[in-house]
Length: 436
Ligand SMILES: Cc1cc2nc3c(=O)[nH]c(=O)nc-3n(C[C@H](O)[C@H](O)[C@H](O)COP(=O)(O)OP(=O)(O)OC[C@H]3O[C@@H](n4cnc5c(N)ncnc54)[C@H](O)[C@@H]3O)c2cc1C
Image (cartoon, rainbow, N blue to C red; front, side, top):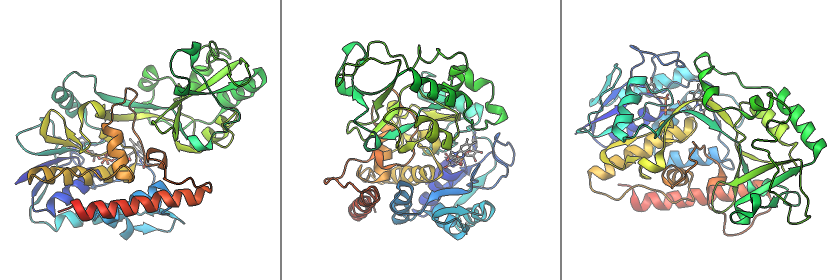
């Protein structure tokens, strides 16, 4: 049986391998070579567009735990990364050229692999297809995807993401539960109140903070649709105090205090293990986010599960249109994979290519869906992209998306190791039972 894979990036390359090894013929469409994206430099498969680091290999980190899960699932792209590894302490950094060559070599071992250098535009839904065209999906394909999914509102072109903070890193002596004008459940929001001096210090740091570089193609357009907090702050010292930091209607129930400015934190999950800084989409560099947001009372020791970013990113409103198997709800022949599904990061994209391909195979042979438990990073990200969420934003691997541990472990490092060990045990058990 022939399967089309669109996009020879990280997800598409991994998806192709998983299908080839299960006996399918794969036509992998990659436009680079005939048409470039604004960011790629080569026509090589699985090119890393920016950093050559795939983050930590330590099992006690979420990224390390995800790598461990992928190893259990025979991930080809990760194997090629290890082969092209360069020294980088505990991180997996690679020689990107060698890594890309290794991926092509692995795929070319299969006689039934065909690499087609062309811009794929018209989606042929009579053929099982995995669309893995990435954050820089070509414009014409984006139009076709929009036509396929319907209303033109469920494909986004920019990320404007506020930081997400680990719930257990908040200083709960300073942070308080309250909703504006008491409308809603008090636990829906946590709040950090600031007096005039605290606000002033935060404001000065914010407007002078170092910002991440945008690519030329991102400048201009991007700020029209999503204004970063630091840019809004430049309009005047009071602007954000009347915007995302407005204090009106919020009183601290513990002390009766009212504030000059308030930062609100919204739960990212029902467990309350992760919180979003409401309205704080930002283009500050990651170290500056750590430094400047530590001015907010209660966030002095905040652990960032995900930093705020503003950048070009084509991604679907996945909870509305995809199942947890990465399959289009309205067409069982069409799967998506990679960054376009709302996972964020190199390894996460590789992972979704792998899981998407396994699920396409399981569907073809009439086997169970492959949805590992939410205690694994793979399963938790599958839940993230498919669980109803009106504020859906892309997500990377982090322990905040996993359910809490049965026992409370105070030591941070031990706690993270426990998350990882649980993920490993649960993935092994799941594979044993479910993978054919
Ligand atoms: C500028 C930028 C920098 C990033 N930096 C990092 C980073 O440092 N670390 C990190 O973890 N993540 C980073 N990411 C996020 C993400 O991890 C990468 O974009 C990752 O490559 C996504 O994998 P993917 O397979 O989904 O897409 P890609 O790897 O981009 O692969 C998609 C492929 O589809 C092809 N394609 C697109 N349209 C068509 C079409 N119509 N027909 C045929 N082929 C098509 C593209 O040429 C591309 O090869 C970055 C993203 C961007 C945009």
